[in-house]
Amino acid sequence: MGKDRQPRGQRRQGGPPAGDATGPDDMGPKKGTGAPKQCGQEEARTCCGCRFPLLLALLQLALGIAVTVVGFLMASISPSLLVRDTPFWAGILVCLVAYLGLFMLCVSYQVDEQTCIQFVMKLLYFLLSALGLMVCVLAAAFAAHHYTRLNRVTCGATLDACHCKVPASEPLSRTFVYRDVTDCTSITFTFKVFLLTQMILNLVCGLVCLLACFVMWKHRYQVFYVGDRMYSLTTSEGQQQKV
Image (spheres, rainbow, N blue to C red):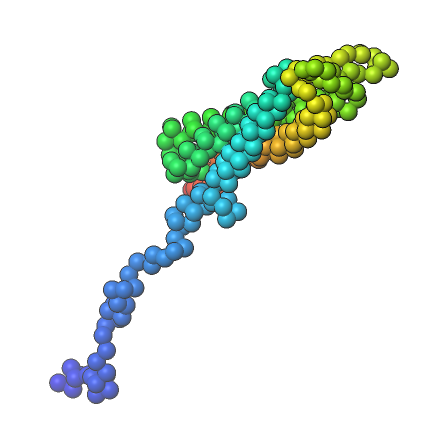
């Protein structure tokens, strides 16, 4: 009988069993704001604190509208101006690229493509941004050529046109006629300011398109594919060590 009786101290300390020490609240990992899945989704939607491609698309849209407006203002000076000298076409193309970027963001932009539509939209946005880069550089080159030409000519007004002549000392002595221009100041000053503005706007717009191409390429080939490759290599090494 004495062996079956427990000590008095243990009998008074009636604590719960060791298995019941942890309450129901401690079971499983706690979910918080720093969960890996939520962090991954936030990284897919942000770039340096700003949602991408919203920032680049908005910059493209603003610059495209500015280039288009300035181009139409240049075309209104004289009907004899060539299309290459009034690069509103570059602004229209950049606006289309910007609208595509904004639409892509509205469809819940993700770095890792989940559907074929997202991949096609990303590829189309990349190709159009590359095309916009080339078009903006071409428009800036045309504007720079016309600007240097106006610096070497002497202009004189007639009844309904402005005649700008290259000096005879130049190898190609030509006369450029700007019709429906009564005051040559609109050519020698106003049009030159427009050309300089077009050069700056198109160069900045081309830089933004180049940045858009770089980020799209980086997200497509340097972030997830490289990570998958490293993960597969580490997994294969771990399996070989276990074997």
